[in-house]
Length: 315
Image 1 (cartoon, rainbow, N blue to C red):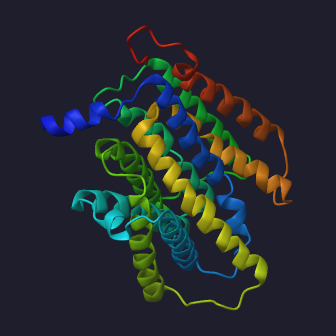
Image 2: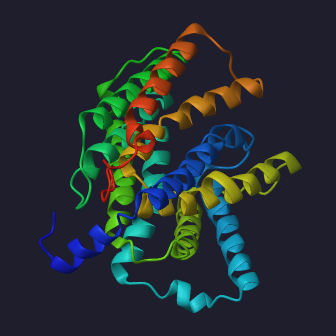
């Protein structure tokens, strides 16, 4: 932790009263619901290369942000005028995570890469203990650990896991992705003075850099059906767009530890959506994973259901 008094004071002020904290946590949870649709929407874009999907999705998110600012009569320049460290964190988090995750999927088998990547919710819970005004309790860690156990069970239900040294680079990319997203999420709290609308600017920069990476490493595909284009639109408006605004608000104003535990609902809900759309089937391992993740989420969000002591904020 830094010893900078100004940073410490700003971080402490980021812990709002209990009522506001709960509302912000619920708003952050909306991001988790939207991320549950990421896999099924991506499955409907088979013609597009990964980086192109990323670039198109962030472009849609950027356009949506511009339209919203225009309708509200906001100053676009005002939203884009943020401190350099905010830009570094925002673009580094959004672009860095997705670039590393896509690299992991290309350099390692998807099951192993996904399993390592899903360390990020647990890392969020652990790292939150370093923030001023946050107290890490045993049930926060236990809840996140149960969520991870459920996710491991869920991943194993899709096939066998065999970590091969030949894919070490992919495993490293997946771990780096998990560290990048968890660090971005927790450090957002230390930049609580940066408005959530700034995420629109981060999406614009991420879209631009994603297009550059796409043109450098992939061949552009435009010959796709209407379903695929609609899926890209859905990605940009939901899991690769609005979700980041919800998550930013939750990280800055809500209960980070609870959101970390709740985040394991994303792979579970994603699996159920894939089953609903005929791209998977319900099995006993999936049901067992459901139980572990639900118990973990209930345990990790205990603070949200506990009445704070008079004059305190709880937790």
